[in-house]
Length: 88
Image (cartoon, rainbow, N blue to C red; front, side, top):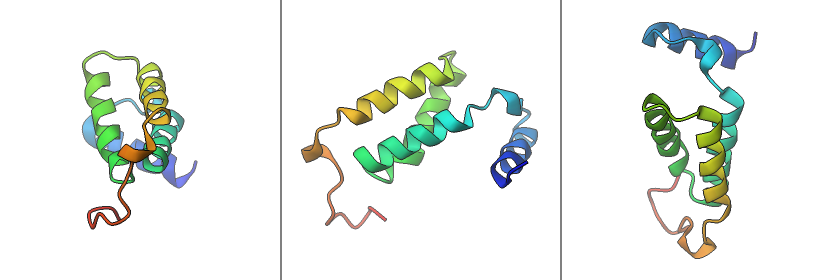
C-alpha cells in the first residue's frame, strides 16, 4: 500500500465510508486540471464540490470528467491572476 492508500483508508474509516468507492485517480486528475488550467486554490474547492455532487447521487468518474472538461475550456483571461495575493 502507498501513503495515499493508507490516508484514504484512514479517512474513510473516520467518516464511515468504503475506501473501495473512492476514485483517487479521478479526483487527483480533476484537482490537477483545475489547478493548472483555472487556478490553484480552485482545486480543493472543486474536489469538495465533486463530493457534494457525488453525495447527491452523481457518478464520481463521470462528474470528475465533466468538471475536467470544463477546466480544459476555461478561458485563459479568466484564469488565475499572478498578482492575486490569495493564490499560493
